[in-house]
Image 1: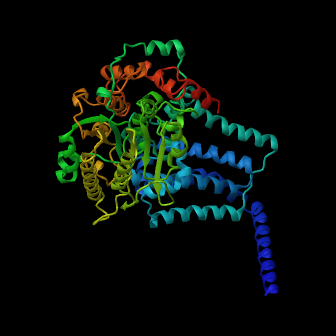
Image 2: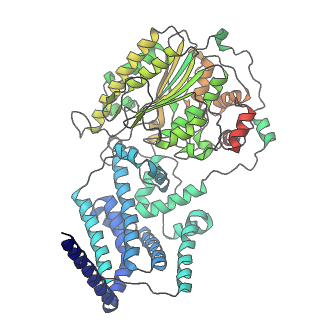
Length: 616
């Protein structure tokens, strides 16, 4: 047996040696063919990546016909990347393999991402790579014959280059010069608007400022995959957050120099529980009359609104990036003031953060954050520890610190489990509670139901189930001998498929998409709460925490009073909803101070804790 193994090993080694000898001969024997294999590769991989993400050759040819200058830009970028790899690695087949992997990986990710939620891929999405396990549970991933064919063609090209073995022979000095020459224009495109703007103009790239998701998608249609990725990377760098020009203690003092009502005492000292429920993808599609959505799907929501108060709040996001809405509700600050990052929690300073839970702690509340999903997604377990919550409760298949039985509805933990956890916390805690929960039940994919192809119908059935659980929860609170205030709102309209989804059927575009940023909410109580302080007109999400504070008659400092004043003068501050609202420099500076700067504005966190956490 041992002799047979040695014989096979020797035969294999001999075969590899013969192949490498043949490849070395091919390098010189097929010089012209090798030259063409290298010269044509940037064009080849550009075409394959664009065809792959667009699914059909016909759509790609239409794009080339309509936007030839953009396609030329794509080829030049691919050529620069390829020259960089050749100069660095010298071996043609390695450079071809690496660039092929990058381009096909990006195009396949774009294919699945757009097919999942109707949003196109941008490079900042790569920050979620560490959460790929979570992302695969969201996505519609379907391996089609076309996808297999396109990958087979690319692999065949790689094998051909491997066999004929072209090499890039330059002196060390010329290699260094080539690498440098490739790096400089790529870096310049991203970090230098003066360098990038004339180039984008020369090749007729669409550089429209993408103030909402639909404008971003329209930009993709103009630029297609690679030009879109490069141009949005430039835009993202230009919009990066920097310290305001005028930021010091005197400026902050001037901003918060307001008269504060000092007689706020929780309506005579009675502190109600405050429950904030941000319901995943909960949206009222009855705003679209043409869909004829049955009221039965929203019966629980309607009942709660009638018993309490129903209104409209402006969400900062659509279809994805729940943490944008979550940030505004947890901090009472606008993501617009952070230049609208998709993941604002990644912008925060590494220190104790003046999230609103800190205020409730200072008022004698117990605080808890509940999320029925992986604690590592969006790094919540690490980042949210700095928000002042006494408890962080997460639950998933591989981890749970919930103290109630966990039940699933479809792919995710059902809302009823979350409501049971809230009830248990309230009944077992002597002090009043402030609880924020971000649910998961109604998250995509929506291919589970009586008809897997009826995505919208399945979504509505889940919404109905969510309403039923909500009604049971509120009925249980009516029996609770503790005053409790509940704020319920969806984080955003759901992710529904791109070309075949309901949004396409409704002809939603950048011109009429504002309705998708209007989220209905209700505020409900099991006691005689004063709802007269709730603004009648829509306000941005980040103001809603102050509305709740007003209802419970909570104490105010200069910061809270300043934010309440802004609610009167700038009720909506959201780029996606209305980019015509001018920048509020004071609000921007105050937001920077709270989450990134030195927290010079009034804050419930003791100075010694802030200083200690900043040092760490």
